[in-house]
Image 1 (tube, one colour):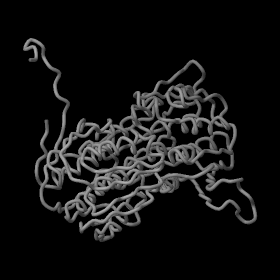
Image 2 (cartoon, rainbow, N blue to C red):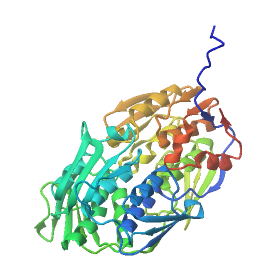
Image 3 (cartoon, one colour):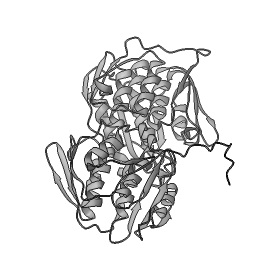
Image 4 (tube, rainbow, N blue to C red):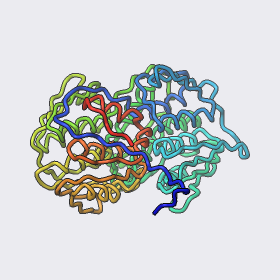
Length: 461
């Protein structure tokens, strides 16, 4: 028997989504994390203040804002975090050795990758560190690319080329870089956004970035280019190696050319988050309901709107409006799909796959193992708890539906694990999600919004 004089530690918090009928309704998710953090970087290094409207309030964006404050970029937050006034006019100029600025990045991949590049181009002495998991996420390909052009030093401090990152530089002295594209598109996006900072500082006419090997998550690179163009930069993405009989690389698949035009202060509107929208479209697919996501369309900047195309392949009906996308759930079949371009929605699809009539195979997402957690291996572990048979592959997995069973699921402090796995509870009783607060990384109000959409309360413990 337990000793009555010894108090037991409290049980970890959980949330249980309660099963019910078809989910029907409409919702507008918060602003895109990807767009918010890209716009913050461009605004922070612009020549005048900017106003960002429809921004996301989350841990990742707060980490970016707090880091920018360390170099005296002032961000005034209003409208519940949805409007950001970014004033870069007192931004600290290049520092010298000894004037070390410490930045804590938590587990925000966009923040550490984007600021590593931007700060190396602007000049200064910085140390960027984070939570233990951040110090296990590779960044060596990015720092190696920067090392070829930096006027100073940059180096990851953990084994395997992982953060913390130490930077001591007066900017970039070169204008031609090469970076691997197979681990994270954020490396290329970071270099792209840093290029106008470096070019204008050293009065280079153009910075050229060559991608070596496969480029994963290409839509995010296109998104970066569109944001940069909004802030005044001239960006050209070239996919063919030979242009006008001129060879622009050896075996490079993509070359990005960026002019020396500086960023300008602007008024910028941010779309709702398409990755977040995937959970609500999935709710319709899983329950045979009808869910409309407002504020997104086929022409959205974010590639993750293509998630609805996969649901359509599985049997759902998709209706496109001028400023909305509706998914109508139908009988689901398994699919074999390459999700390289929309890899942030793999976890969402994996839960939908539990309710299909046959196996679903996801390919092209080997890089998902290097996210907030191993989004192949750890995801497979949790899906098996729900009764599925899961076979891991080098670049993905095959999910074969089984007999549903209740389970308590780990989230590995990964926001996307918590949000996606919670959807299983729409059909399976007794699915409990541990550490639900980890959704604060990108979507603090996720469970409240889901509860509002399904119109019944969750069970919290």
